[in-house]
Length: 145
Image 1 (tube, rainbow, N blue to C red):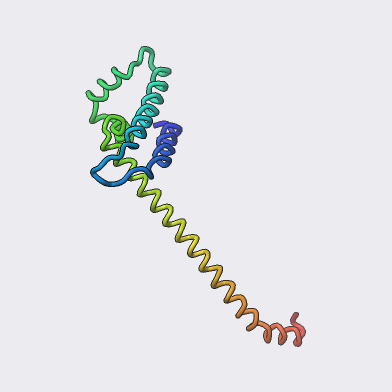
Image 2 (cartoon, rainbow, N blue to C red; image 1 turned 135 degrees about the horizontal axis):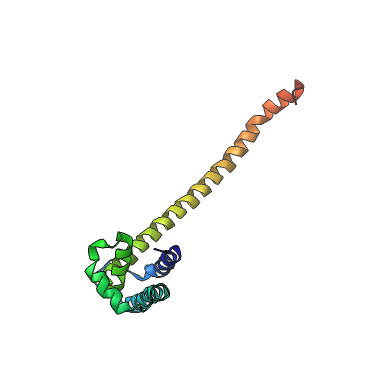
């Protein structure tokens, strides 16, 4: 699968995954998101294959896919399944949502850790500088500074 194709799919999913919830009830907004997604994927497939194969049609592709289901690479098959199966698409969006939430949690932990580190560094440095004064005085009086 072409990197720009994968990038477009990922960008779309990241952009819209926040709308999806892991429940049996499907929101109305899912319909337009799914329709736009399938239109995007189908148009990219059709555009690429029309340029590469003379006389190409999406109907022909569909029948070829059904005939060769077991022969298609897993990533490509999964992507194609998200076009024709809303449940697969919803699972894809939920996976992106979980990933986005995990990344947000890690960023929050990093911010919290950085903030805690800075607070500790400031309070430690104040205590350390006060504790270094006798050492600096001693070194300078002995001619080491």
